[in-house]
Picture 1 (cartoon, rainbow, N blue to C red):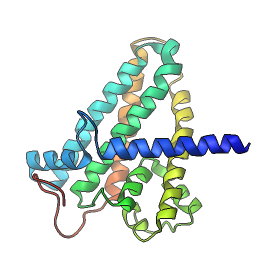
Picture 2 (tube, one colour; picture 1 turned 180 degrees about the horizontal axis):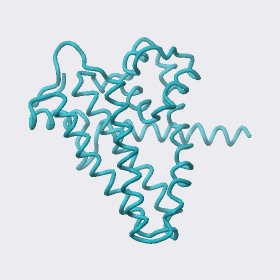
Picture 3 (tube, helix red, strand yellow; picture 1 turned 90 degrees about the vertical axis):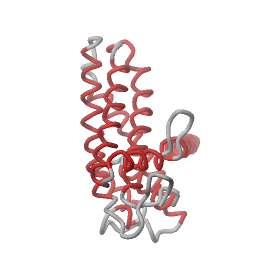
Length: 220
Protein backbone atom coordinates (compact mmCIF):
# COMPACT_ATOMS: atom_id res chain seq x y z
CA UNK A 1 0.00 0.00 0.00
CA UNK A 2 2.82 2.38 0.94
CA UNK A 3 4.65 1.69 -2.32
CA UNK A 4 1.49 2.29 -4.30
CA UNK A 5 0.95 5.64 -2.61
CA UNK A 6 4.57 6.57 -3.26
CA UNK A 7 4.23 5.72 -6.95
CA UNK A 8 1.00 7.72 -7.17
CA UNK A 9 2.64 10.70 -5.45
CA UNK A 10 5.59 10.56 -7.83
CA UNK A 11 3.28 10.32 -10.84
CA UNK A 12 1.31 13.38 -9.73
CA UNK A 13 4.55 15.33 -9.22
CA UNK A 14 5.70 14.44 -12.73
CA UNK A 15 2.33 15.37 -14.24
CA UNK A 16 2.21 18.74 -12.48
CA UNK A 17 5.80 19.54 -13.40
CA UNK A 18 5.18 18.69 -17.04
CA UNK A 19 2.03 20.77 -17.37
CA UNK A 20 3.66 23.77 -15.69
CA UNK A 21 6.95 23.50 -17.55
CA UNK A 22 5.57 22.85 -21.02
CA UNK A 23 1.99 24.09 -20.89
CA UNK A 24 2.87 27.48 -19.39
CA UNK A 25 6.56 28.01 -20.14
CA UNK A 26 6.48 26.47 -23.62
CA UNK A 27 9.04 24.31 -25.37
CA UNK A 28 10.39 23.98 -28.88
CA UNK A 29 7.75 25.16 -31.34
CA UNK A 30 5.19 25.72 -28.58
CA UNK A 31 5.24 29.37 -27.56
CA UNK A 32 5.02 30.36 -23.93
CA UNK A 33 1.56 31.25 -22.65
CA UNK A 34 2.72 34.85 -22.31
CA UNK A 35 3.80 34.94 -25.95
CA UNK A 36 0.46 33.48 -27.02
CA UNK A 37 -1.34 36.17 -25.01
CA UNK A 38 0.77 38.96 -26.46
CA UNK A 39 0.26 37.73 -30.03
CA UNK A 40 -3.51 37.61 -29.55
CA UNK A 41 -3.49 41.11 -28.07
CA UNK A 42 -1.34 42.42 -30.93
CA UNK A 43 -3.75 40.92 -33.47
CA UNK A 44 -6.95 42.23 -31.88
CA UNK A 45 -6.08 45.23 -29.72
CA UNK A 46 -8.79 44.27 -27.25
CA UNK A 47 -8.53 41.99 -24.21
CA UNK A 48 -11.80 40.11 -24.65
CA UNK A 49 -11.32 39.71 -28.39
CA UNK A 50 -7.83 38.41 -27.67
CA UNK A 51 -9.30 35.81 -25.32
CA UNK A 52 -11.82 34.79 -27.97
CA UNK A 53 -8.94 34.35 -30.42
CA UNK A 54 -6.95 32.29 -27.91
CA UNK A 55 -9.92 30.01 -27.23
CA UNK A 56 -10.64 29.53 -30.94
CA UNK A 57 -7.02 28.63 -31.71
CA UNK A 58 -6.85 26.11 -28.87
CA UNK A 59 -10.22 24.61 -29.77
CA UNK A 60 -8.77 23.77 -33.18
CA UNK A 61 -5.75 22.13 -31.58
CA UNK A 62 -7.87 20.11 -29.17
CA UNK A 63 -10.29 18.98 -31.88
CA UNK A 64 -7.41 17.96 -34.15
CA UNK A 65 -5.78 15.98 -31.34
CA UNK A 66 -9.04 14.24 -30.48
CA UNK A 67 -9.66 13.36 -34.13
CA UNK A 68 -6.20 11.95 -34.79
CA UNK A 69 -6.11 9.78 -31.68
CA UNK A 70 -9.57 8.42 -32.45
CA UNK A 71 -8.90 7.41 -36.04
CA UNK A 72 -7.80 3.90 -35.09
CA UNK A 73 -11.06 3.12 -33.34
CA UNK A 74 -11.32 0.67 -30.45
CA UNK A 75 -8.16 -1.26 -31.43
CA UNK A 76 -5.80 1.65 -30.77
CA UNK A 77 -7.77 3.17 -27.87
CA UNK A 78 -5.59 1.73 -25.04
CA UNK A 79 -2.54 3.46 -26.52
CA UNK A 80 -4.15 6.53 -28.06
CA UNK A 81 -6.29 7.58 -25.08
CA UNK A 82 -3.47 8.27 -22.58
CA UNK A 83 -1.55 10.18 -25.27
CA UNK A 84 -4.65 12.18 -26.11
CA UNK A 85 -5.37 13.02 -22.46
CA UNK A 86 -1.82 14.31 -21.95
CA UNK A 87 -2.01 16.34 -25.16
CA UNK A 88 -5.44 17.68 -24.30
CA UNK A 89 -4.47 18.93 -20.85
CA UNK A 90 -1.28 20.42 -22.26
CA UNK A 91 -3.38 22.45 -24.72
CA UNK A 92 -5.83 23.33 -21.95
CA UNK A 93 -3.05 24.50 -19.61
CA UNK A 94 -1.56 26.67 -22.35
CA UNK A 95 -4.96 28.19 -23.13
CA UNK A 96 -5.89 28.94 -19.51
CA UNK A 97 -2.48 30.47 -18.79
CA UNK A 98 -2.74 32.69 -21.88
CA UNK A 99 -6.20 33.84 -20.76
CA UNK A 100 -4.81 34.61 -17.30
CA UNK A 101 -2.02 36.70 -18.87
CA UNK A 102 -4.46 38.69 -21.00
CA UNK A 103 -6.48 39.41 -17.87
CA UNK A 104 -3.34 40.78 -16.17
CA UNK A 105 -2.32 37.81 -13.99
CA UNK A 106 1.40 37.00 -13.89
CA UNK A 107 1.86 33.31 -14.79
CA UNK A 108 5.35 33.37 -13.29
CA UNK A 109 3.75 33.57 -9.84
CA UNK A 110 3.28 30.21 -8.11
CA UNK A 111 -0.25 31.06 -6.95
CA UNK A 112 -1.35 31.92 -10.50
CA UNK A 113 0.26 28.75 -11.87
CA UNK A 114 -1.63 26.67 -9.32
CA UNK A 115 -4.84 28.51 -10.21
CA UNK A 116 -4.24 27.63 -13.87
CA UNK A 117 -3.98 23.94 -12.96
CA UNK A 118 -7.02 24.19 -10.71
CA UNK A 119 -9.09 25.54 -13.60
CA UNK A 120 -8.53 22.26 -15.47
CA UNK A 121 -10.59 20.37 -12.91
CA UNK A 122 -13.75 22.30 -13.74
CA UNK A 123 -16.50 21.70 -11.20
CA UNK A 124 -14.08 19.74 -9.00
CA UNK A 125 -12.10 22.91 -8.18
CA UNK A 126 -14.01 23.59 -4.95
CA UNK A 127 -13.43 20.02 -3.78
CA UNK A 128 -9.69 20.30 -4.41
CA UNK A 129 -9.51 23.55 -2.43
CA UNK A 130 -11.57 22.20 0.45
CA UNK A 131 -9.35 19.12 0.77
CA UNK A 132 -6.31 21.38 0.82
CA UNK A 133 -7.89 23.32 3.70
CA UNK A 134 -8.41 26.47 1.65
CA UNK A 135 -11.60 28.50 1.71
CA UNK A 136 -13.57 28.50 -1.50
CA UNK A 137 -14.93 32.04 -1.35
CA UNK A 138 -14.10 34.06 -4.44
CA UNK A 139 -12.34 32.96 -7.61
CA UNK A 140 -9.28 30.72 -7.88
CA UNK A 141 -6.83 33.47 -8.83
CA UNK A 142 -7.58 35.27 -5.55
CA UNK A 143 -8.26 32.26 -3.31
CA UNK A 144 -4.67 31.04 -3.76
CA UNK A 145 -2.87 34.37 -3.40
CA UNK A 146 -2.27 34.26 0.34
CA UNK A 147 -1.70 30.54 0.89
CA UNK A 148 1.68 29.01 1.71
CA UNK A 149 3.93 27.24 -0.83
CA UNK A 150 3.20 23.97 0.99
CA UNK A 151 -0.54 24.49 0.52
CA UNK A 152 0.00 25.24 -3.19
CA UNK A 153 1.82 21.92 -3.51
CA UNK A 154 -1.18 20.17 -1.96
CA UNK A 155 -3.46 21.90 -4.46
CA UNK A 156 -1.22 20.86 -7.35
CA UNK A 157 -1.23 17.24 -6.20
CA UNK A 158 -4.99 17.35 -5.80
CA UNK A 159 -5.35 18.65 -9.35
CA UNK A 160 -3.11 15.89 -10.75
CA UNK A 161 -5.10 13.25 -8.89
CA UNK A 162 -8.36 14.63 -10.31
CA UNK A 163 -6.93 14.58 -13.81
CA UNK A 164 -5.92 10.94 -13.38
CA UNK A 165 -9.51 10.17 -12.40
CA UNK A 166 -10.71 11.98 -15.50
CA UNK A 167 -8.55 9.70 -17.62
CA UNK A 168 -10.93 6.89 -16.69
CA UNK A 169 -13.98 9.06 -17.27
CA UNK A 170 -12.79 10.04 -20.73
CA UNK A 171 -12.15 6.41 -21.54
CA UNK A 172 -15.74 5.47 -20.65
CA UNK A 173 -17.12 8.47 -22.53
CA UNK A 174 -15.22 7.41 -25.63
CA UNK A 175 -16.01 3.72 -25.44
CA UNK A 176 -18.05 4.19 -28.60
CA UNK A 177 -14.87 4.58 -30.62
CA UNK A 178 -15.26 1.14 -32.14
CA UNK A 179 -15.24 2.35 -35.74
CA UNK A 180 -12.23 4.14 -37.24
CA UNK A 181 -12.90 7.68 -38.56
CA UNK A 182 -16.21 7.78 -36.66
CA UNK A 183 -14.14 7.46 -33.50
CA UNK A 184 -12.08 10.41 -34.68
CA UNK A 185 -15.20 12.55 -35.03
CA UNK A 186 -16.33 11.54 -31.55
CA UNK A 187 -12.92 12.41 -30.13
CA UNK A 188 -12.78 15.79 -31.87
CA UNK A 189 -16.26 16.74 -30.67
CA UNK A 190 -15.66 15.52 -27.12
CA UNK A 191 -12.36 17.41 -26.73
CA UNK A 192 -13.73 20.62 -28.24
CA UNK A 193 -16.72 20.63 -25.90
CA UNK A 194 -14.59 19.91 -22.84
CA UNK A 195 -12.06 22.61 -23.74
CA UNK A 196 -14.86 25.13 -24.29
CA UNK A 197 -16.09 24.34 -20.78
CA UNK A 198 -12.59 24.89 -19.36
CA UNK A 199 -12.34 28.20 -21.24
CA UNK A 200 -15.55 29.33 -19.54
CA UNK A 201 -14.07 28.36 -16.16
CA UNK A 202 -10.89 30.29 -16.97
CA UNK A 203 -12.87 33.47 -17.63
CA UNK A 204 -14.47 33.04 -14.20
CA UNK A 205 -11.29 32.13 -12.33
CA UNK A 206 -9.21 35.00 -13.76
CA UNK A 207 -11.18 38.26 -13.69
CA UNK A 208 -9.55 41.36 -15.20
CA UNK A 209 -6.80 42.84 -13.04
CA UNK A 210 -6.56 46.56 -12.46
CA UNK A 211 -3.29 48.12 -13.56
CA UNK A 212 -0.90 47.43 -16.45
CA UNK A 213 -1.92 44.71 -18.88
CA UNK A 214 0.41 42.55 -20.96
CA UNK A 215 1.47 44.18 -24.21
CA UNK A 216 2.77 42.97 -27.56
CA UNK A 217 6.42 43.44 -26.58
CA UNK A 218 6.60 41.45 -23.36
CA UNK A 219 5.07 40.59 -20.01
CA UNK A 220 3.04 42.61 -17.54
